Image (cartoon, rainbow, N blue to C red; front, side, top):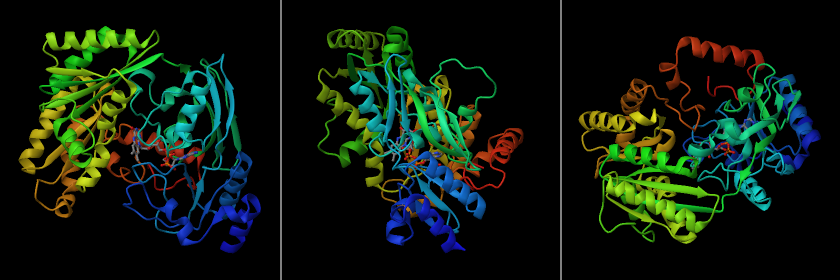
Length: 469
Ligand code: FAD
């Protein structure tokens, strides 16, 4: 029975692209942080939409679950199978062609296995910008970005992946191909199926191609680092920047001093932007359509006003691309620095921007009482209200013991998020990791509507079962 199924898979994609050996399958079965190892009947690597459709039809016939996978950089255990060994992984990474660029319509049609970095490069070759930007952009795929509705550093100006997509092609759970590859900015013709599949984490169907929005390339991007006395000052600075810069402001990242110190400890080649330490820092980026000189003048003017108004206590503005990269490197290295330091308990949360300082004060204080000495690595996309609020063990104590406190720590952090009317998953999704946690915070009605959609589109529950719901 299994061998019949595998032979039929080989007949569709070729035997080289049906991986059954443990050693070949390994990278597809474990997550980015190597916390979990799933099992699969096979890893299948189709090269066309037709092949995906035929594989899904075959799976439906044999009642075999499918786990779609892109770059496998997801952080919530969504892209790997469970340990039953009954599912197949369908990796889309061989479907990596740019199909068309319509410069006048400012759109690009791509297969979903394209790496995000390659899409950015293809857009730049046409003097256009595809603004989605994540630290994993060299490994993650457009299909994964769409399926997780990825965020990243440019959401403040351009929105999440959902806002960057106009049309989709999807292989349904029955193995039919829905061609919704429309390049329209206006289309009010009933339920928005595109938006259902975006952010569905592969639980409703397999996205095979997409029409993406492009934007004019800015003439200059300038980065600055501001030192702040406290989290309230970050909110004041953000408000000032938004007022003074409008859509020119493309990133506003918050970095706590503890986060910066971890980076400097584990990446000694990187330089502290200031001589002394401050409680918080903000990394700002502006994208200017006039010139570099104009951009620098604009940034310097805002920073000067921020210092005069008491929102920032110090600031540096990068005047070259390499200086700009060095400042971004400080922000992008936080996750890796944390990993080198040891294990920690991560939270990817969002809060209304106006509530962020209060959330930080209240939650820091509650954790300090419950877990004296615990260390908080707080950083993230403050401009869109998204914090990575990670908690690690008190200095000198065992990580392994501390990790056992995860349920209690999650409860404190997520209950506060809920109190502040926030979300326990801002940009990474739910996957297997937060599937049970979400039930504590979404209403039964909302969960029931989600289950009804799942049952309508995937009545056999074969598309990435056990994820999200
Ligand atoms: P995968 O991990 O392969 O899959 C993710 C989910 O999408 C899974 O549920 C999978 O089943 C589903 N899926 C994949 N392809 C398809 C498809 N074609 N059709 C249907 N379902 C599919 N995320 C952010 O949002 N913002 C960040 O700033 C960010 N920074 C990161 C930094 C690092 C260093 C790392 C490791 C990750 C980061 N992430 C971030 C998380 C991750 O990179 C994103 O979620 C990314 O969008 C996942 O893309 P992927 O191709 O790796 O998808």
